Length: 387
Image (cartoon, rainbow, N blue to C red; front, side, top):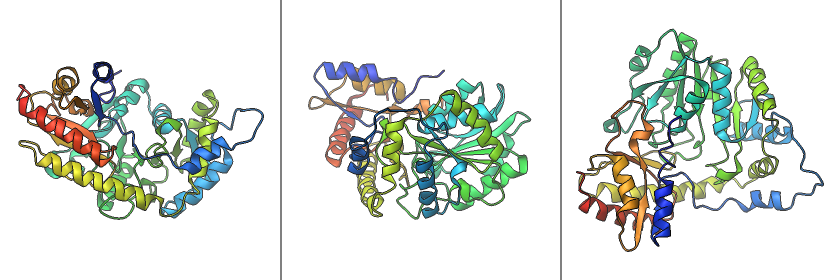
């Protein structure tokens, strides 16, 4: 199992706090936007005598309300094609365990969400990568490059749209190309759509479930974590029109009994939020994005493409080794009694040596804190010896 590049530096951050430093956490996608009161009240005002086991597939009332939500964003699905999971992470792991055998291969464009590597390791699956490039803002590599990676052991393509860690939003054309490829080679397409609402340059991105002719090939993974700033709720969804696959994943769901009860109440309540909820949160994230990207690109030697979605940017810094630099920030650096915690780039790649000068920033803090964190980083780059 690989370490999480997002969390492996936590002991150094804890030590910095114990030394009296203020740490600005830009390493992890934990928004500071408050969880909607409607969700919290649904739990606070619940009235029952026993917190019982629920259905292994998730509460039927919740799944039926999700059908209406998905229809509102152009996804036509039935409630029995949705399985509620303990976070999007469990949805991915269940899918990997159901679809693959040990030794199978999955193709993932890199950089990718680091925990995909962990899920693959748990399932005994080999990750095969195709590298996207900062010069194209981390667009999907040419489809021919992905096809070259297909072997008799290849079982799936895995993507995140909008993308974590780069913020890239795959176009309708790119999604259709992926659909054609998985149909041609009879592969699964796993699409992590956790950041669906956060697209700053257009409409809601093309969902994998809107692709034509690939109903048995597509698995969509979803979660309330980012959409409603409810990361600790641990409620996700495994969604597919492939009945055999739903039946197989149900065995894993039964083995862990049921998803969390209180958090399902919160997730169900979230579906009653007013229609302008995402307009407000999107506007806030867009303003944070514009600020952090402009600050980064104003620093000497820094290159940060403008992300179109999610709430991350992936930047190249004038440093020798991102792992060393991010640890140094927490161990040996401070500015105005503060420092910043970042996620080192190499952890988002499977190819050795890639991402050595890159880091991921999560613009999940308010703009005052982002400015203060950027002040720290700017001063740190001036004095860091590993150039």
